[in-house]
Every structure is written in structure tokens, then in C-alpha cells.
Image 1: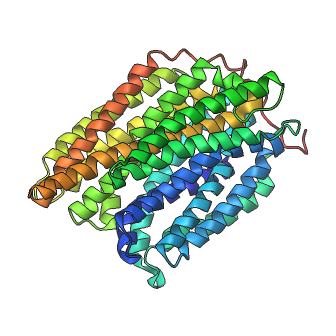
Image 2: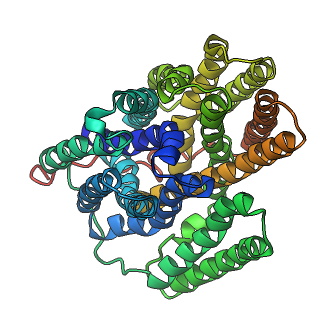
Image 3: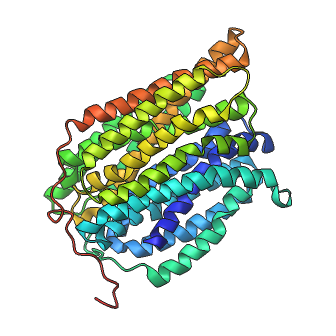
Length: 477
């Protein structure tokens, strides 16, 4: 489990480090605001596109093999990002880094789901939340320290190069410690499903990422409409393959599973309230009030500390009261965002980082409380033989939710900022007003999560779908 979580840590720390480094990247590579957004968006889009097909490929050819390939490629493309000579090269490298991340991440949850008996899965999934918390703490601090140190004059480049030693360690440890899990070579690759799923995700995510920076031209709404058509075609294609007893990219049993689909909706809404928040907060602190990357990272540290504390506490609950813990986590996020709204509105000429401690700590505790229970509840509805596909779908909707959140939060923040600056409002007040407006969306997203939970039925008893025996290493089997 440590090896699996090391790969998850490498992926998660990469995201948090990049957020802190965005203003410095823009200056260093003379990038436009749209290009800077694409440093994040290129990864999100590629990651979302690859999760479903690579999750299913893990079910087919073996999850350990797919995991190893993903770690190797993620390490190589991290090096490519760190050595990129231009913004265009960096964005391309981020695309391939996202695809490599999509190869390894579905296998992390899928292998854990099969490796542990039902009574131990609560602890295993809380460890995943703990890893997210550690990565969130380490990311801003490590990013700020690495950029501030300017090692050998490399400026921002070490934020990507730091993945190389982690990747090498993970590759070696995987070969020695991670067990093989049962694969299903009889499953045939659903090429049509892969194409339709990728097309659906692209038609949905691309206009969401690009729309607000381009002023929402007509073609963005056309693409969003076509994504619904493509999603319907995907469902029809999968149903047709099921009737012909052919393997499906996303099994029809999951498409017809009301609990799983509602869980996917909750995941999408939940993560829409998280992803965009940190991008606008970094801009608010660094561009709006002149904080350095390290100062910005230190200001946000209470959030990941809250995640860390909640993840440790969640392990004591094992698999008990998952819906109540999701609702409690969302409630804490609402409270924290409201307090943060009050703090932001009270900011004058300078930011007092101590004012952000309590709201961000509460928000982080809410996220850490909800996230492991949310993943566990959704995957409890997935039969073991489809664990890779179900895990890929879960993380794909997580990324779609993040893209939606980035689009909506970015649209609110940047359009509000442009309007206020254009009206002659002082810059500090314009940033305060815009950040406050963006926080309203975050609050509404977590309110929606609590309302949707009212319709989510309890997960099936462990052992019905989720009761597969723990996987043993092949040599022992």
C-alpha cells in the first residue's frame, strides 16, 4: 500500500506545486494568461481522457503492469516538463504527463480494493486521504522553497524534476512489493467505446477550460451540446455490446446502477467546489497582494493540515457511517468557506495570513473527512471484476468536476476582476470583491452535495459486490 500511495503522492504533489508556481512560470517563459491556464488544463484534460480506457486496460492486461508503465512514463515526462525550453513544449509535455498519470492512478484504487478484505478497506481508503493531505502540505511548501532557492539558477524547473527520484523509487519498489491482481484476458478492447468516451470528455472539458478566457464564443456551447449527444451514443454503444455479450469500456451494469451514477454526480459536484478555489486563491495572494510563492504556500498550509488531521481521524471509523461523514465534511467546507468569505471581505491594503488559518483549517478538515468516505461509498457499488473500470470512471468524473469548477470559478473571478478594474476601482478592492464572488460558488456546490446525499441509498453490504478476498502475491497463490 505504501508503494501505491507513493505514486499517488507523486501525482498529487505535482498538482499542488504547479498551482503555487503559476505566476513565476508566466514571468519566466513570457506566457499569456491563457497559456498559463493551459499548464494546468492540459494535464486535467489528458488525465480525464485517459482514466476510463486505462482503467479498463488494467482490468484486461493486469493492473500491476499498467501501474508500472504509468509510473515510468510519468517520471520521464516530469523530466521533460522540467527541461522544457518554451511554454509550448511545456504544455505538450504536460499532456503526456497527464496521460501517464491516467495510466497509474486507476490502478492505485483498483489494486487497493482487491488487496484488502472488506473490514480493512476503510483504513486503506483513509490512507489515500492521508496521502492527499501530505501531498497538499508538501506541495505548496516544497514549491515555494524550490522556487525561492533558485537551485543552480533553474528557477521553477525543480518543481517537476523533483518527481524523478520519487518515480525511480516507486518503479523499483513496485517490482518487489506490489502483488499481481487477477486480470481478465478474455475481455476484448472496446475501441468504439474508447473513442466515444474520449470524444465525450473532450467535448465537455475543452470548452469549459477555454470558454471563459475567450469570452464564451458560440462554438463552446455547440461543443457542450455535442458532448451530450456523444454521451448518449456512448451509452447506446455499450448497451449494444452488452446484448452481444462483448466486453464494454464502462460495463452496462454500472451505467444502469443508480447508486453508482448518483455517486458519480456527487463526486462531480464535490470536486467542482475544490479545484478552481486554489487557482484563484494563488492569484489573489500573489498577484493581488504581492505575496511570494513561499508566502502564498505558507498561507494555504492550514488547509492541507486540516486534510491530514481528518484523514488520520477517518481511519478510526473504518467503513462506518460513510454518508454521515460525507455530509459532515461538506458541512465543514460550507462553514469554512463562509468564514473565508468574511475574512476576504475584511482585507484592506495588505493580507494578514493569520486571518486565513481558521477558515482554511476547517475547509481542509471537511475535505479530509468527506473524500475517503466518498470514494469508498461509490466503489462499494462496483463488482470486483470491474474495479479498474469503476475506479477510472470515478477519477474521470472527479477531473470533469474539477474542470467545471475551474471554468465557473475562473469565469466569476476574472470577469468580476476585469469589470471592477475597468470601472476604476482600486486593485486591492477589485481583487477582494472578485474573490468574494468566487467563494459564493464554492459554498453553493457543497450545499448541493448535501442535498444530493439525501437521495443516495446506503451502499450494499461489503461482501456482496465488494467482498472479494484479498489478493495474494502470485508466488503464494
